[in-house]
Picture 1 (cartoon, rainbow over the protein chains, first blue to last red):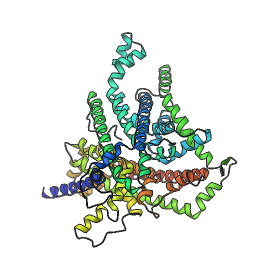
Picture 2 (picture 1 turned 45 degrees about the vertical axis):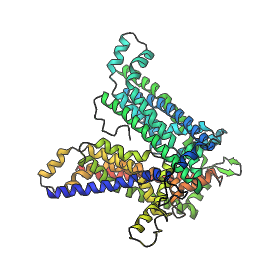
Picture 3 (picture 1 turned 180 degrees about the horizontal axis):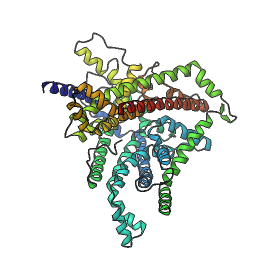
Picture 4 (picture 1 turned 60 degrees about the horizontal axis):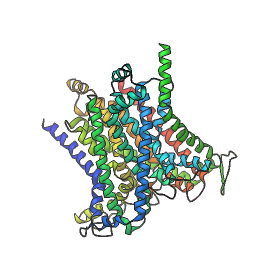
Length: 275
Length: 289
């Protein structure tokens, strides 16, 4: 018994140290955002909120934020719609070449982002199209669809088919059934998918770096700022705000995902949807 | 029955077609184009589309590219090994020792991953730097007299930063594999006289191999393609092949050579992944016997 207790505490100690390692950079972000010094190093000198105030009248930042919002909202909507088609087909039907088709759709999960970025860039060059926010959206949708599918797979597999059949029997059209029966039932999954894909797109850098034109997205803007030491405290403040935003979005997404899982009476603690 | 199956097949294909069409047009087609590109030549602003192997010859024989390729491979393998080995005990802990708050643990493990990747890499620079958090802490504690310099702008920094960046991707697949293990097998092993160590190596580890393999591939493949971490914390000796690919598509304006480098590195990573996959299948089969 004593031996067992000792082993448990070893593992526990390791897990705790590992969590410190995981959170070390995240904890530093707000610390430096409120630190009254232009140098990002210890010791800390004093408390200030100036860096947050400096963000307010920065027009380059504002346009980067609005560009990123346009890209992330559009990419989230398109990838959730495409993810829904694929998830529904995959859960409900058997069809020829299913594995191959699904494999291609899920390929971006195991493809380095630089390859996706370079491939799209080459195609755009060949077609003579210029880079814009739309080209970034196209790339982001590719990366987001697999995540949307993972979330919506569980929403669709929890759907009771007899409900839809009952709706058809009662004279609803296919669209009416979708609108009045299917959609309300998968709604939590849809919201969760929108939030997760929005977050992925908002943070994506490599594809945006290659495919952005003159309108830069937020991560590309941050990348350009990292070269100037004087701009760093402002970047820390910006990062802190982004951190708050993404964490709250993910908590909301997690809430809706669990509701989907609960509707089908499953244990919400499984990792479905997160990977 | 067969008419039903045909009907079902048609419906399924129709439903998946928008997503499939998107993937064909904007993923498969561009990838094929990159492969074509790698056989072409950049002629200042024009492209010469006569097929040639010159780009591959340069990519595989020029000492600079060969060195970068080998180094990328070495760093990626090192990163993957460190990441998976350090992640395994955490996955094991959450699966076997945590009883009620598994979901919370998983959320806590994945949460840092959702903060800006760029900023996380940059913050490692702050932690590992000359006046960084790590050095200040060691100085303050009196463990060292002057700041350590071997931790930033080299391979170590790249390994630490990437092991951090890919942590959740390593932990989750291993956790899922460990969760699937039938706990009665462990009791049976114990009843038959296996000690904890023997039991771990004879039951738990072989059954966790699929998860370990998934973690290995999930970390290895994108690591080769990363160029932010090498740029920010790697210094000159930490630069990897992706930095060169980026330069070829950017400043150097030699997209065909960049394409050849990209295709070559994917080819190498693909081959390596296949080897790992086959090896782990073999280990799995031996364990089953």
